[in-house]
Amino acid sequence: MSSSQRFRFLCVIDFEATCDDYNVNHGDQLQEIIEFPAVLLDTEVLKVVDTFQVFIKPEVEPILTDFCKNLTGITQDQIDNGINLLDAMKRFDDWLHVTHGVISTGLERNFAIATDGPWDIKNMLFNDCKRKNILDYFHDVKYYSEWVNVRRMYKSEYGRAGGITSQLQGLNMTFEGKEHCGLDDAKNIARIVIKMITDGKVFKLNDRLRGKKKEK
Ligand code: AMP
Ligand code: MG
Ligand code: MG
Image 1 (cartoon, rainbow, N blue to C red):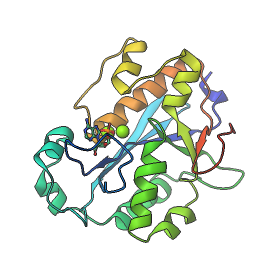
Image 2: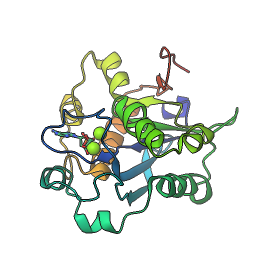
Image 3: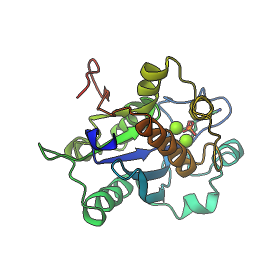
Image 4: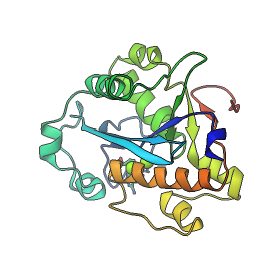
């Protein structure tokens, strides 16, 4: 069943960003990414190949709010020792291509990004890159222009989809780790993907930066 997957590798990412309790969840133009985590999943053997995590120092508000620290579990120390967003994206790209040898462009492409909903790429990463004047890099690497929207796929397959916890519940699983820790969120999204592949679902690109979605 799993051999029918379009992509041999799916890389789940789930950004955490600066926030306060007046923020209404995702999409706030003022949010800056502070955690860049990733879970590389082999869709053939249904196993996590490796995980990635770097912390990013925000430029506008370098001091995290207590709300943000409590929500994400990220410490001020981790942020103070963080790198900038462009270096984080380059390190991620090296990890994908140099360490793991994924192919991300062209006909032999064997990899796609997967996220819980559209926000991580469409709002958080795009807006943060725009503000930091690094959209050229964002576009150059190609793999951020179309991705696997797991929540949308879950909804079309099972008829409803809430957050990660409720998606897990629908599959008779519970959240492992700390909710809103980016790496734990990504690991749990990966568990949802593994279960859906086991159930025979085939993951395709179903979300993109602009225009209508189309499945590929
Ligand atoms: P998540 O992937 O659900 O952990 O959310 C990503 C980011 O959205 C967080 O790092 C926060 O910046 C923001 N966020 C999520 N939930 C909340 C919330 N309840 N209140 C304020 N901001 C939130
Ligand atoms: Mg998220
Ligand atoms: Mg998260």
